[in-house]
Image 1: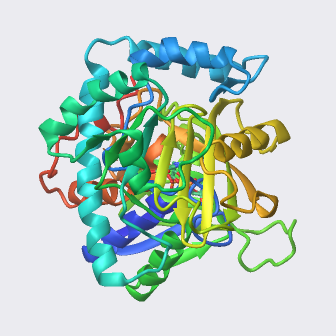
Image 2 (image 1 turned 180 degrees about the vertical axis):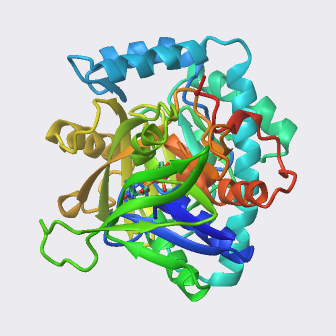
Length: 432
Ligand SMILES: Cc1cc2nc3c(=O)[nH]c(=O)nc-3n(C[C@H](O)[C@H](O)[C@H](O)COP(=O)(O)OP(=O)(O)OC[C@H]3O[C@@H](n4cnc5c(N)ncnc54)[C@H](O)[C@@H]3O)c2cc1C
């Protein structure tokens, strides 16, 4: 079958890889000049197969509000609040207060993560992409006893699904991360030995090359501008092609591409593309920041990845670099990098791993998590258009879930019975 995948982020590229391996003739389209230039570019690098939570968390209503009041709290809302932000918050509150939904969605996401892990292990075995990867587990710190009991409550589902985890006292935590010597309180940490790390942009670039060798047509600097729909079927897409036009502000030429199936994997851009298709896909761009700095002192630097509960930061080792990531800001699309946010990242990092990296050399980045108001991504067909499938809305965990959701999408596209329950991921769950 001829398939067009819209989006060359980690989700689009893993989709292309899986579909090409299944024998489909795949074209990937992206408006950027190469793969993984948007959200898949500077994320925290955690493949946190055991640490996955749906966005609409009943506890978030309380802790989120507390966090909003703290100057250095992780959750931020831009004022004045836009209609779009308000709508997203109302939907989130609605999902968060539906009894039992959080647990159902968390289970589904953990199952998807296990599928993803299998996919990554196979790719690692067969393709040998170098993306600064490591499989040394994840530590989630607990600054106090209260945080410990919250972490312990979350282990029941991990036990049930056979996901390894272990509570560590501070001494044992420092055996895994000897550099955890900063002034931030450390009461203990939850250790998830099965979790992994890696640079998702390097991975996506490597996978793009493997896709190309597999016959995938990679079309960069091509923007999707519209759809040709007849009788509940997409006949083709209208594009503006800038690839032949070198000047930065060139107009580009218009074009038309068609296929048997279309996969929408355009991250935050999926919302607008879905709207053009008459679908409601209330994705919100939840903004985050990262700093990536070279390691200065090997003995003090993180070895793997640490989730710091004090500042709510993710600290990840990526080869000779360390990446510090944080914040969930609801401020619509603004690419500004305010110094006070970066200062919080520096301070939080220094309070965990002081003196280990050269923060003066750090590269700053901001990106947007394509978040659904409930949390699980939208994967699979929609009832309104017979040849469209979605693979988008991966929010905070797109790097982790990408291989699993690509595999699931491949199964659905080929009419196979999905290998895990898919109800939580229904692609048209937001449409009336
Ligand atoms: C601060 C931060 C930290 C994160 N940390 C982690 C982490 O540690 N672990 C984890 O699992 N996940 C993490 N994530 C989430 C993860 O990065 C995302 O879920 C994932 O990158 C989404 O991938 P994607 O391919 O869907 O989107 P993207 O990478 O954004 O790709 C979408 C692509 O679609 C293209 N596109 C959009 N519209 C059009 C159009 N009209 N025409 C042509 N092309 C179009 C864009 O150019 C873009 O390249 C983090 C995110 C942030 C912001």
